Length: 292
Length: 309
Image (cartoon, rainbow over all chains, first blue to last red):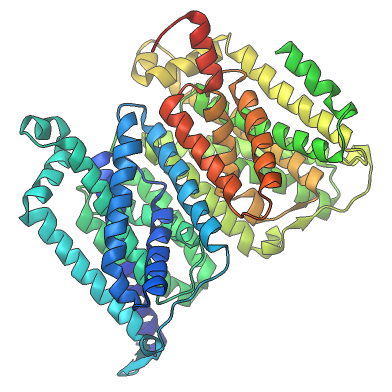
């Protein structure tokens, strides 16, 4: 196998981790709240700037800033759901979509007002200097990024499957009315789910801060990819979303190598339409599909 | 309504250059909003990709004009036809596979994105540089020195789309579309040819957006994939309907009339604060969705009828 292909594959897997985590958040929000979150890209950008601001403001490294950024993102997501989305719970579906769109405009442009449209970089030299693994080269920052993604996802698994809150979240996703009858405070759980989705997204964004230059509309480019991935994995199917994220990362990187960057976008969007049409429950087959 | 119309007609004879450009922006948003209104407001098929139709309209007339010397008037008609076909294609695929709600919206979004990438990367379609329309000042070629003529033509377009909606909403076609929105199953069981009507709505809606697209190209003289195929165009089609009231005849007009001046105002008041006007945009969307779901027009109608909700 060509060494460049192998390198492209590795890059794809590492970037795919970010896609996977962000799409996991999207899928969780869809699974529990049945909302396609159009503020997802903007929330990702919030995560980037949260890490940036904390890191610069407190003079600590980007990875040390991550936990605080996570807490902030949870609060933000919790509030968005509790204050805004919750109060139009029973409106027609597209209202919630539009609401998240409005939120996206607000978040993105508040960032624009505060941080200006200029590119910001927060690269730490020690993490940027490429290291060699056999014939391959990779920046340590990207390895850390992937390691954190794996750790967070594992933590997520524990939270969802081993704790009471996690069980409540899964119950609410499966059957809201049933969950309520079992004494679960569904409203709070829904807010928690949105908060957790925001955390996933925020971490995915925050991990990119040490890797690339950030600007307020950067998240937009990730948002559509998250939609593609979450649909591919089956909306609401978390592990499907995670696997598809890695998969899309690899496909994008390889097709970028073979076809050139922008045509790979066409390929991905084309596949997206095909999946939406033919198999909207995703290739793993267990996602839940909303009828409106 | 008549007062509004009269004001719109005499407006260009009093307004200065700056006011004229705002007037054109208002009408452009109104045209886009009305086109969205047909497919999504009346027929209930939520589109998040009206930029696809808008862009197809703008590009069809522009490429035909620049490369083949075809008058943009004819190009506009061809573009409308192309957009109508695109609408039927998207609709047929989606409805064939029973897509609804968010998934339908995502498909329309994906089509707009694919077109953007396609136009951005294919040299035959002018690539990322876009198309520059040479200026000639010949009315046969949809060019005028006087902005007022542009304005009046666009006004005519908006009136035409609005009149079309007004007429269909009293006839079988419009009533059936509303029935489909309210409950597709019931409409079907009552013998409404659901698929045919939905496709017709998408075709008309696409054609109307394409018409606005050609106007945009001729008026501003330049298009590229990054402006005509972006999701912000799609959003511009939705927002006036939400603010004014979707599924109502004059809602989108009211919406456009409110949003554009508000944005201009915030732009000129806070010139050096980047993004504030878009924050206002976002806040407007959130506030209307939360507190005034039927839009301004819907709320007015409700108040008149004395219905409390």
